[in-house]
Image (cartoon, rainbow, N blue to C red; front, side, top):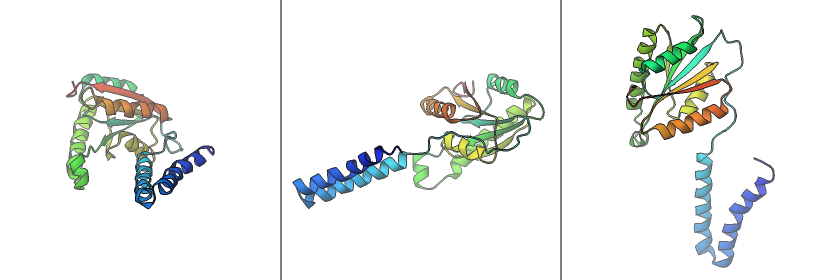
Length: 199
């Protein structure tokens, strides 16, 4: 945070509470203070680091590709595009499937359904890649695509990241994730959009 912003933040917190106490009294001051506290918590929860996402430094053998499969990777055009990116037999490929946890499942702490769905996506994706002659490892990741990539790059220093998503109702979320990855990644990035059902 810039040094000049800190006094503004303190003023934004203190002034409404002080004015409510002075002008109306404790009957208004306490609720205003509670509202300010809730607003601070909500803003803090929504914030996350926006720095560059860099693979862990170290020697990487040739090329390492991280494919983030938001949908099953079964579109022949997408497979061809990925195969064209693989430089040699020494290239390493990992497929990462974010576990998409529903609102009610999150509250019930039921993540098994989301993990099972992610594992199905991985099985389909690995089979399609194998049919194209590409051997790959697989992982299930965080439901947030950007967070999943950031977590995975800690142990798998990819030289290239490919996001595969569908042209369907989730396009808005995929677009936001792709834009953030494009701006923050220090590895190569490509976004492949397939048809609603893998076209």
